[in-house]
Image 1 (cartoon, rainbow, N blue to C red):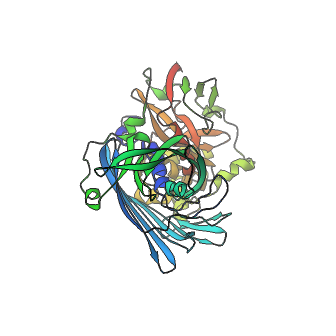
Image 2: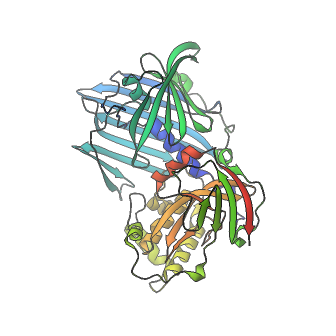
Image 3: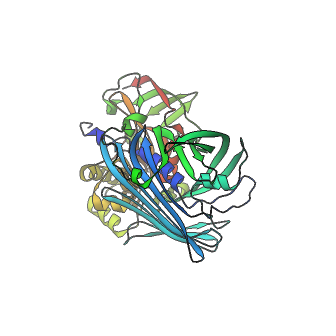
Length: 486
């Protein structure tokens, strides 16, 4: 089952989490609110700046940002280009963001595009009174989302511009809410100002104000000059950005030398695990997790740092009838990126399954169809079920989101799960799904496993906004396999 090109299967999940953090850092749609509750606007200075992006001192991309006044409004634009090494494959990623601000610097409208290889993601929208109205998805199948707002969001170049505008005192912390278009969610970030530092920038030593943001347990720091311009930033996984000239920013990138994100964040196992599908149970000592994770429940039992995973018994499932609990019926509903009610998704389910099939038979056929028909290919994008069905390629995230959409269209409640899975001496970040057929059963369309083997360690359950919870644990988790039961 596992004799495949595994270098193109694992690790994309943590890469997605990194991109969410990067998008938040680069995000212009910041709903800024200080710890005292006072709303502040972003800087009104004109700006045209360039920054290089590095991973462990190897240049992997650049950022170009402009900000200017147009009549009685303001226009912002940001272009991010990167080449990322994941699973042994280097891919280009381009993120374009632009929008219009009102005279008081509040958000009027925006457009966000993420492009990589054959996949594209778009989100655009505008503020209407006390609502943020968003549209996402393919041009012929856009989904509308309405987010209620207590206050119209203000715009700043970044959370650090916002912290600069609030004039935080040294060793003081401000709280900020930010909107992330890639997950359609609003998150809280704490930003602390530290002692000023002198840093070298473009051959000069510059006195700078240092700020650090705590996002989901991951620390990201920035150094600003006396005018509030960002000079340098550092983040997780050896990532950093530094102000530069246009000429330097457009110079070539470091080819083939960047560390593979997949290998970088994987976790070594203390013992070899063979024939994983033959295991009935596994016991693992696990440390470095926090309360934001969903590690206990269903087939997983976690107590005193010991995690026990028991493989589901498909023969002892209760009979699935029409009386599915209301809290589970919620997972039949479509969502902006899981378009289970779209005609193309429904048509595909009708091709795969028969009306007379049981829920279990339908689930098995759907998982098997995805395994055989979706090319296993690393992809840097926001997973979108319709786009995966159209392109028929993607990594574990694409397999998972399509599985959930097809299962829901077949009348089977389903959700995405993400966490770790074992392969050749290490545990790698990975995504799969869970479906309800009398009980919640795990399924992995990448491996064609139904149920999934017990080395699948669930850390989160839910859609892309939940994946952000992984950011704070990257590099912190340690595992020790205690027992294997066959």
